[in-house]
Length: 329
Image (cartoon, rainbow, N blue to C red; front, top):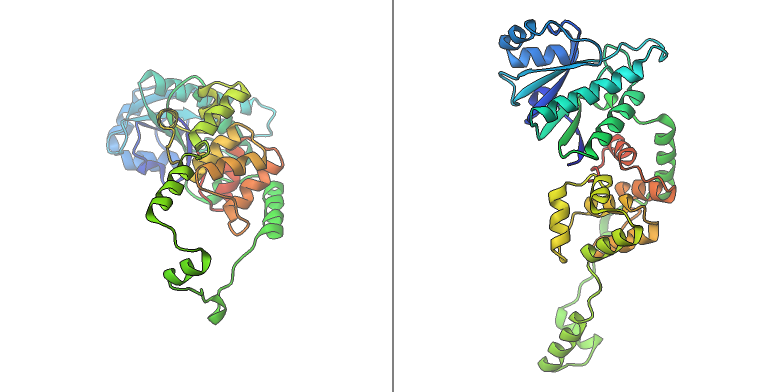
């Protein structure tokens, strides 16, 4: 299952487990930790008192009490000093141990905050990179839906240079239609007049024959092109749908139904996973009935990354999130 990036209050997440960025005592505190304890109620604190604290990088699990999930997984992130005190290794351990604990307790979905990126001072861009990297590595061998939950946009910033480059590209490409007054009028004609001017009358039999011939010349579908491209690239189905950040069940529907109608974001996610060129991406979109347009900010951002041959779907999603666009996968 994929990673989903959502802007939400983690205490409102309806999933099997949420991860608490706790302090070593596990007795509550500020930020996410305090919010989870307040929402769960006093029974959470009572259970945490029995756990004897938690070391940095480790994880422990409790019931969730008044929260809309089954479990709370408590992990203690590193305090950022200068990056030379094993902060990265400790933060990686937080994600690894939390995910393994979720797996051990048969969780099918888990929601993470950006661990250590608040009061502990870990640089947000680096904290996000580690979160995505470790969760992605875990999902290569495991089926689980993992959320990265951010409360506000400031907690989820891609590099300033990337934002600047994308903004410049949008400015170069973006075509905004202005509709004012009579200049926007659409000229229409009665259907029968257009038909008479365009072509002579034809018999009902001939029309049916032409339609039958046209339908018999249908091109390959999106599903057929996708499976062909997977074969051509030599990757496995699993590698493809996980690189596309797409759920296994959805991929199964696409594989078994040659006429499956995907969402535009799903088509692009597979194009990114297969590292298709811009022309190939446009072709795959056309198979599903879509196109890329310079009047659409989402489309321009996708074009920007494909032209740069940047096919990391999570980097692309970070940029789409930054510009308030729908995410891939």
